[in-house]
Image (cartoon, rainbow, N blue to C red; front, side, top):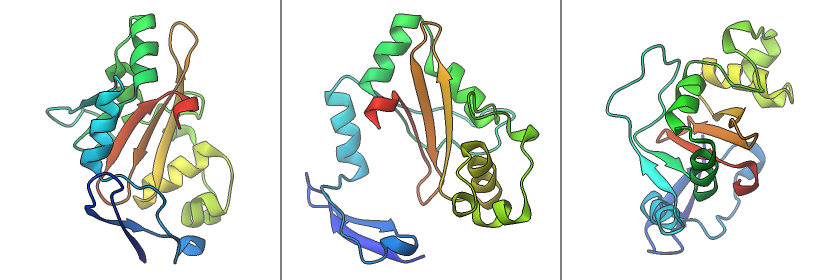
Length: 168
């Protein structure tokens, strides 16, 4: 897959990002390297966490670091819930609003082309999981009714973020 090169807007570290189709030749706008992005999250009251081992029953890896944005930290605190509750569901294929992985049937076209063949998030997730590409997204609600997204990027260094939709 072609790559786009740029530099971190905070520390000038060289960045490379995979570029699909229409994005080949694009320019990175105000990109941050992983270290600067993590520091920004921490400075704003978010959390960068790690799981010491892989979770049993996991369909995919969460990555070395899990970022929990400031809004998600606040929503979880209000509801007296822990991010791990949602991360475990996510990695085991319970994608909340987007369904259960094991109950999703794909056409051959959806299996092969993913988001290019459908706009259904559940089907896109399943295709991405089977092909080990793009991202897997879940949507949950806290016990206080706040929407919470969990997104795992499967491209390059696997990373997971827990966030509120408005923080996307």
